[in-house]
Amino acid sequence: MLTGTALIVVFVLAIVLLILLVSKWNVHPFLAIMGIALVLAVGIGIPLETIPTTIGKGFSSIFTSIGIVIILGTIIGLILEKTGAAIRLADAIIRVIGEKHPQLAVMLIGWIISVPVFCDSGFVIVNPIRKWLARKTKFSSVTLTVALSAGLYVAHVFIPPTPGPIATAGLVGLENNLLLVIGMGVAVSIVPLIAAYFFATYIGRKVKSTDELDVESISQAYNQHNLPSTFASVLPILLPIVLMAGGSVASLAKMEGYVGTLLVFLGKPIIALAMGLVCALPLLWRQKMGKDLYNITQDSLKTAGPIIFITAAGSVLGQIIVEAGFVGYIKENASSLSSIGLFFPFVIAAILKSSQGSSTVAMTTTAGIMGLYFSDASLMTALGMTTPLDAAMVVMAIGAGAMTVSHANDSYFWVVTNFGGLTPQNGYKTQTALTFILGVTSIITLFVISLFV
Image (tube, rainbow, N blue to C red; front, side):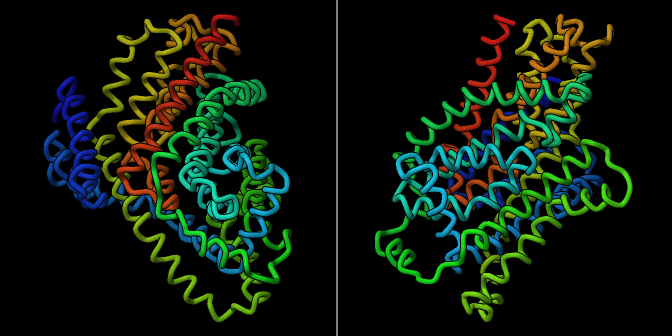
């Protein structure tokens, strides 16, 4: 099996070829990713008899994690659209924020929602509001897609109780100082969100999506009468968020007994979104559209299917990289990068993020490499980061790296591009470019802060 520099070179070539296949030669992402994963597995020397198992493991992991979440969220979203509930929600948001800056509205909504909710789930949940805000304000759908993605992603990597930041904080010895991590995460979020706001506004003028509708479609949508109430419209979205937040709090507080077990159960994304779907069904009956449930479900499955399968293919590629020993190689050679200070955890997390796709895996792996800030045998001590504040800065640097960058092997990339009506080519121009900007502005912000603390 290939190791060392040869492994790195082969991986880089594989990613370049993947980008060319999808963006330049218009090969379907599913075929491109699966093909690259198979060729890569053979090329780096994974034993032939284990390759099918590795592929199956990576593919099936998506169905056990976000597959059902995507399906349930898609059904809820389509119900909100068909019944006019999404229109009601868009109008409510516009009344509060105003029509001039809808990208700020969805960005802040995403940032708040992603504190208790995974960014994948959060995008699926909020997407109906994003679409109707674009229709109502005649604002660029791409701008709102990028703004929502940014808000969700920044909170996802910086602010507990999202699992990634919690695990990272614990691995560097801050499990009893989560308030410090939360405060630091909120502060560090500001600059990358400002950068994302301007990038979203800019890229929306350059890229179009299939969401861009004509004036006649907008007019028809807003000619609906007897819209559901704001409470009935928001409940299918709000309830899953509340349930997932409750589950996060129960896990964080290590609640025991029946209440704790129940909260954790209800807080699982699959269960929380199932409850949201139950709350969405009365909207159909109220609008006398009960007979449309079958067709809505069928259409939702058609929409969710390609997203799930492409995401699963990306998971296969990530699994191949893991099986190749890439993560182990980074761990073994971490000392050669340890001289660059706060940029060290950023670089390690960015390499791991770009290679295997998962921000959470990148964060926890990098935190494991760094070790405890109070341990004499850790890299934290070697880098001179021996206080809780130093450790919180490292957690933020890891989070910044874990955003850099989102591309074809990341499930979030496919959720954003598909639900945002973007082609894979435009996905690289928007989501991949966005995550690069978020990561770089975040680490620069941290570096500046480190000069004064």
